[in-house]
Length: 328
Image 1 (cartoon, one colour):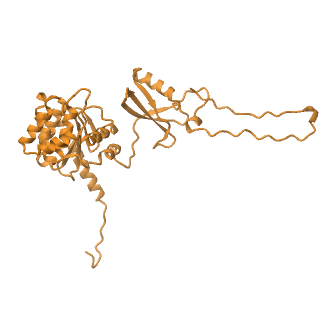
Image 2: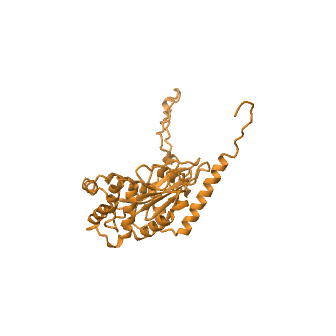
Image 3: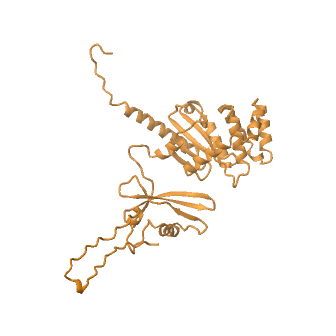
């Protein structure tokens, strides 16, 4: 609903019988402070700062069904001078389907959809900040490798199985020393009934070490077609026993649901990164969605290796050392 801004005028009373008396000065009524959004609206003008107006506009633009709720945030300062930021979320029942930021002009008549980049930092800086805390993640490859690949995966997803095979086959040898791979759980429970259980088992096995986790990782994907919600736990424990893992400890971990918090953290990270499907990969923060062919993935990795080398060279290119007497 549009808000009208009105001026409150004081009325001067004139009494003809007392016209000779000095007129009493009347102070104008004090204006109530207006919110930032209210101060940017004009009477009779549609404004993106009106939440319903923006929601209706976006629903029409993107053909959004009536079943999706559109939530618009209050205006916030943006990274661009003179523009305000609004966050728009699409809500399906109790879950958030998608979020997007819109920049709004001062008068509320223009909106810009897109991401703001800061030329002083990586174009993937926001993703890298969310991917920087790797403690507790299953890792393959050297910790200080110049290229980091993070994969959000689902053990019951057939596309994830193929992507896992490509990564495990090719991230070895010389290339394997230049790339570190992190595995993150993102089970799609709505369509994959045993994926969450498989993720919890994997987290329990990982407590014994990364090497044991990767053995389990390979086993699950290899036997994906024969696993079910009813047999996944028993078969996983049989596999762990064959590999001389501590099945008693793994079983106790599952009974006590000790890895629920770790799984929820992985899901929360995926949500913050707006991961929508599996597999989703991040190569030094660069998002790649779907089963990426190895030729394409390797080309991106090679590019990142070359870029990292150039950056390192540029940072050390301009150091000047003077040969001073008596100083080595």
